[in-house]
Image (tube, rainbow, N blue to C red; front, side):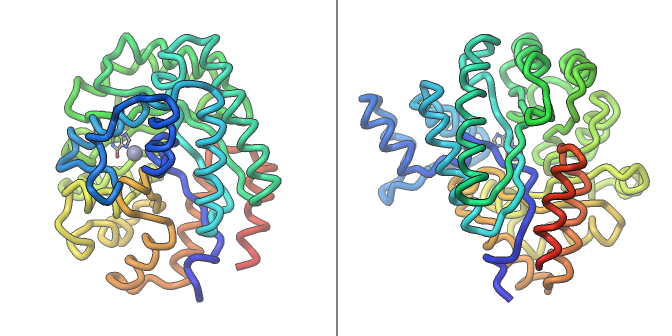
Length: 328
Ligand code: HPA
Ligand code: ZN
């Protein structure tokens, strides 16, 4: 069996974070912006730790300046995902980088992204849905503007709201107003937690933001009572093992808690997060899990089922994707 061609569902992917370095370097040249400092001598993104990763990430977004840039980016990212067998994907979209939080500007960016998604569905057979994400270290006031962008554009395509960024900035409760606004607009909710913060950060995100999914969540393993509660509640973890290894959350895959979380009943899915930053693809994630934890086709099938059950899409989209998954 080839993990590459096996149909897969991916729920945790940052659109700008999926930009290949060559794509960003090409735009930088076109626009005469000097961001050469973010690349190493081989042209890969260069960073040493999480905070530097966030800086490099934000520097790369400086060259994404127009809806047209995001249209091209979306198409390139979806072509790459589809080439790794991804049939359904959800991507985090940041109005912060698409008009700075202005609702009118955000609508134009979103329109361009959706045009590219429609084209990718026709050309590559991949379905995309969008999750607006606010950025924690930009603070609660800016998050409210981002939540308003999300609430104003919520529909059957823009289906979720979340939070990413530096987990050590502020508390989840500081963002409760934004999550309440998004929930009232009908959006489904996820939050990054338990990547840099310990188990308490997962508990707080779950309790104070009332999310149904957690981005990463892996450090919940340090509190087994919490793991039991989250398993019982059916909270889904969007686990990104390759990301955790490159950013140094765990020294190697054998030390990663994904298998322990699964054994303890946590519903989990596997994603790439920011694939070119972490030299990751969906193929590579599953190849590594097969090598270290002896995961096989049945495990991939089970993970796909968890992911599509937890997907922020409507029932007819879910049925369509389930049919594609059944072919495997
Ligand atoms: N964690 C937090 N914020 C992020 C990430 C991540 O892995 N990727 C992009 N923004
Ligand atoms: Zn992420």
